[in-house]
Image 1 (cartoon, rainbow, N blue to C red):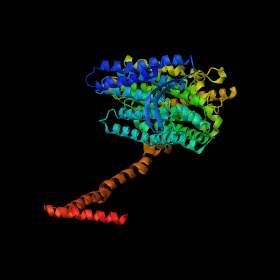
Image 2 (image 1 turned 90 degrees about the vertical axis):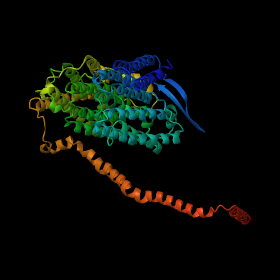
Image 3 (image 1 turned 45 degrees about the vertical axis):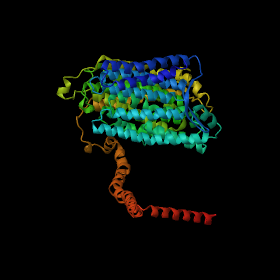
Image 4 (image 1 turned 135 degrees about the vertical axis):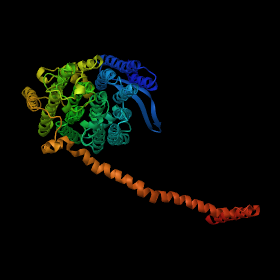
Length: 633
């Protein structure tokens, strides 16, 4: 049992090595079996570890080797498997395995089939390392690794310049956040002498609340989380990351990698509980991001872009919960979101696959009868994310609203409005894609068919999880049956500053009724707009209302960044290349060379070939040195 986490970690790495080294030689079936079985084996080991965790509260610790040892500095490379780790492991390996299976059908005809599975396996390895780490420094290795794999997979179809530009954008914007994480590590070493979780948390407990050092550390860690989890202002990379194959969007940018920032904050709950100022910042950035992204998603026509902005918005919900000290609630929504968002992305992939890579929803419509399995599962995913009872999102979203209501009435109202907008843009997607007349091109319409069985089964399993996942966290109204809270209790019981949220049953009922009302209202509004009225295949954006134009163009944030950052940086680079470099750097380098050349020419006059002259110079030099030594003494 002690070695199980190590085997779990290295199974996907083994899959990466085999498929990577065998690329171009292994048959597709062999690649598929290796890619899926290694992640499936990791899932089996995770289930074994989960069963073991039910019998004991003690985590498994495994010290592998001394990583850095210099003087008093000693950094060990170790793994920690506690209940918080296991929740993440179940999501990564469970959802990851389903997406690997789905990818077999989706990517079967792609020339880079083996390379794709190698990259997927490598991503799972780094994501497992991130959550299994026993220190912030080891976590940072996995943190950077998933960033690398994200770059590789977003730009997988590298011959398309727009896709490689999206990969570069994701990589660069994540590095901005990673700088904050790195500075937090340096400050931890300086303050605590270690980055090990237990050492840092134990020493931090002696600090007073809002100590400037703790506020600095937690703020810098949150900067890293902002980059990885696409929060304001570093959120613009995530929608562009939809350039990669759709299974990539489901795995990396919905279910696992983008939730790493949430996991980081929850893992460091001892530090954040001692930094109320940072928690306030997290609450408001999460709330603002949730609302902002939902407003943008309202008008997008690309099916994957709608889901991408939805992901940004839902991540904002998770951070709003964490900023309200509701860390279990944050994890609860992380789990349910992994189910229904992976389902929605894979469902979108099934639609795109059937329409031969068409992604504009205005060119779809009427697919309900042609893609019955995809339609049914997408309905479940839409209802789950909208918060319809008793599906997964209903319970986790309501729990977030309850937690935030204790911190700020304004934030509560903004998140309630965001819940309405979420239902609106998701029902809009559902009506545009599956209802009304079929607006696809005639040559596409003849070839539309349901996905193969290997793509349908992951959809069905994720739909089932999206339907029942909410029962992991039933509200107090139904008794003390919050399974996830009970399971994670040993993790948070050590933090005396975490006070359980208790609410009157009447308020819980009010929140539930509000959620149902918002879903019904959104369904009614979108039904009237996108089902009873004809849908245009193209929209004259300049003729639309101002709010629509601002939302459609994503509030011009990318243009603002281009004006304030990208273009000045390009101008500065052009200036250095065209003017500063030739006039200054080249002048210095070439001037140094010319000086050395002329000095050499001058000194060649001393090379007469006369031994007597050389002896004279030697004697003169010795006399000069002796004279200097005498006068110096």
